[in-house]
Amino acid sequence: MKLQPLDFEKPIADLEQSLEDLRRQSRENNVNLEPEARRLEAKIEETKKAIYSNLTAWQRVQIARHTARPFTLDYLQLSFTDFIELHGDRRFAEDPSMPGGLATIGKHKCVVIGHQKGRDTKENIYRNFGCANPEGYRKALRLMRMAEKFDLPFVALIDTPGAYPGIGAEERHIAESIAVNIRDMMTLRTPTVAVVIGEGGSGGALGIGVADRVLMLENSYYSVISPEGCAAILWKHRKHAPEAAEALKLTANDLKEFKLVDDVVPEPLGGAHQNQEQAIENLRDAVVKHIDELKQIPIEQLLEQRYEKFRRAGFFAGE
Image 1 (cartoon, rainbow, N blue to C red):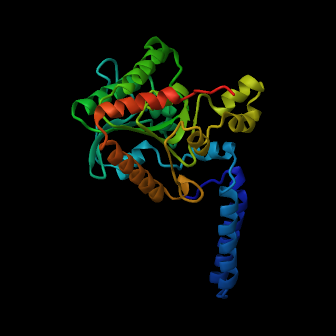
Image 2 (image 1 turned 60 degrees about the vertical axis):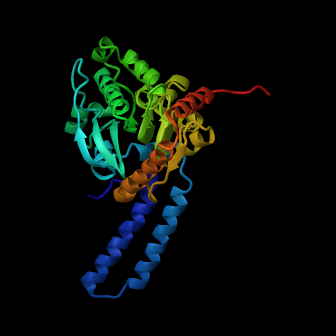
Image 3 (image 1 turned 90 degrees about the horizontal axis):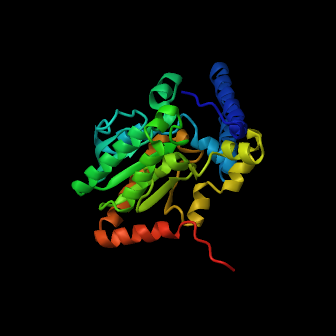
């Protein structure tokens, strides 16, 4: 499938089209144009490095939302093995926007859950565009407690613009379900790892994001509000989303600098959607590495470190 280029990727797409045309002419006319093709390939690589090494916050947001990026189920099928999906919150319903269950990653058996988006209209409606209802968060809590009971690491894959704000979700107490998860994840007696794989939006992300290790993919974002929402409030127009993205400091490198995330997982040049296999392998290696480290720490010490980690968040010292 040919990927639709983002606006800032169009110079690369134009060069790739020129290369494709050159190779076609070489085949059709039986002319050796390989030296010109090699020069174009070098130019493409040079342009890619120039563009992707200087991405703005808004450009990273666009990459984080790319529909060709690996989603949670892609990681569950390829980063993890032996995945067995578990359904329902045992109170109201199953939430397809947050699949989870038992799996193995590396040598570790674990419990895993994550937000799932769709790649077309039908799938997005089924998955509710990755916006979980209260039953999704209550299912997540049920699986967290299962992980604790059987002494299994808990892994969360975050990719949501936010929790679902509809009337039904409010009637079933979406805010309460997220608050309970945040509270109970603080005292969960098992190692926990959360990874922002795309969008990390507001309380919808925090509802499964309070973990011993919080990781972000290089081109993901994590924010209290979307850039468009912030622009609508502060500038009264969504066209200011690029300025809002810059002001929000929502990129992985920004948040690593602020010590709000613990590690940045590298992506292939151009983003995870350009090379899904490499992105999936990078995530697996990062999660395994952090689980290995966490399992060496006694549980009481781990709980104390988790408490101190989140107490430090948002603390500012006066001059």
